Amino acid sequence: MAEIANRIYETSEGQILFISDFSDISDNEKVVSRALSVEEKKGNIVRLANGVYLRPKNTRFGIVYPSIDEMVMAIAQRDKVQIQPSGVTALNKLGLSTQVPTKYTYLTSGSGRVLTLGNRTIELKRSVPKNFAFQTVLAALLVQALRTLGQKNVGNQELSTIRKLVNEEEHKDLFVQDLTLMPVWMRKLITDIKDKNEHYDTLVKSHNR
Image (cartoon, rainbow, N blue to C red; front, side):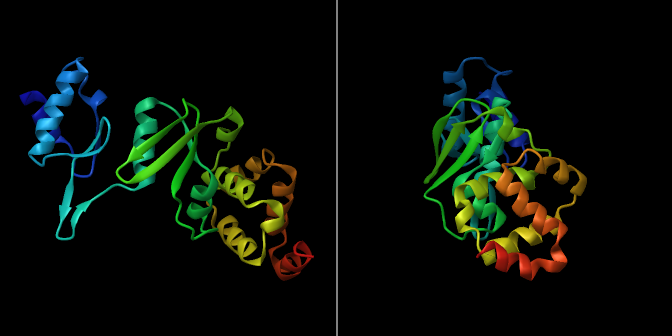
């Protein structure tokens, strides 16, 4: 359909597109899918997954693909749900792990499911509202990362990274409020770092005894 083709041409390079983006042109998903398939064959869009496409941005190095985060955020926006990185995904985002995940894991306020985006697997796990109650991204990520790491596995290197993240947090007042929502051991660990940076070396040694 010409209208669908024109809509694609009007979108920005690098934009993620869904079948639902064209529902105002046609409410028949099969018709939209066929039109998108034609545009894909022409090279005007790239299929990322079932019903998920990309308006490609080409460089001399090839197509620039969106990050996992960008794709998941786009899906969350489409579905009008909240998402939160968890597991190794949260550890990676905070720099607490360099392990490359075989599966990217996110908590969601919507329905849980497994997505295949290209050669990458993303698991969306339905979670409780309290995991989305944090006002700062840092607090939400720290809870998921530390839960995955475990209290006994927080060593010198992890404490150093957390101290840097806490010091660089822009919304300090909101972060302090978020501390009250954390499990007790996480709250104590982060509060000690936040309030006693001048005694940090002592803190590290005492924590690891």
